[in-house]
Amino acid sequence: MQHWLMKSEPETYSIDDLKRDHIEPWTGIRNYQVRNMIRNDMRVGDLAFFYHSNCKPPGVVGTMEIIKTAYPDPTAFDPGHIYFDPKSSPNNPRWLMVDVKFKQKFSRLISLDELRQHPELKDLLVLRKGNRLSITPMNEKEWDFIVTLGGK
Image 1 (cartoon, rainbow, N blue to C red):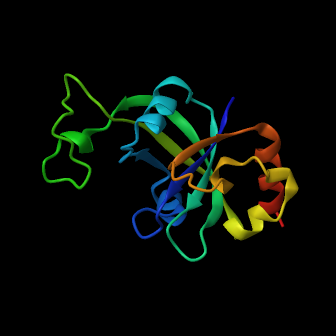
Image 2: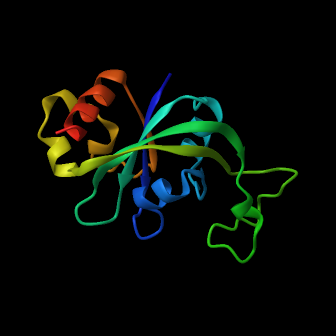
């Protein structure tokens, strides 16, 4: 099993939306590196942190599970959708998505600033300057440490 951190802007789709919907396709990935991780590395049963980004403050707000592996993202084929890509087609899809299932909402947000305070998380990709990836892998020790923080 692998562990991930997956970002979403709460105004677009929040942990409360996922809690309400229970299962949701994770659409809108338009970065080749992230697409390749979705395609090559994500598996059913992997766990992910739900991270609220582009807000004040950003941070980890809960957990979810990957319940369906990579498949074509239909938003890329819809000319009226914000994530439309004219170079992608159902016969030759360029962009992929996975389905996620709500697991837990933390009792508090674990802010980016708080994550930076812990030496145990010094290698966490979301803490690296210039990292703008919407999905990043993490190791089990980092996962366990953040889960512990979420239980406080």
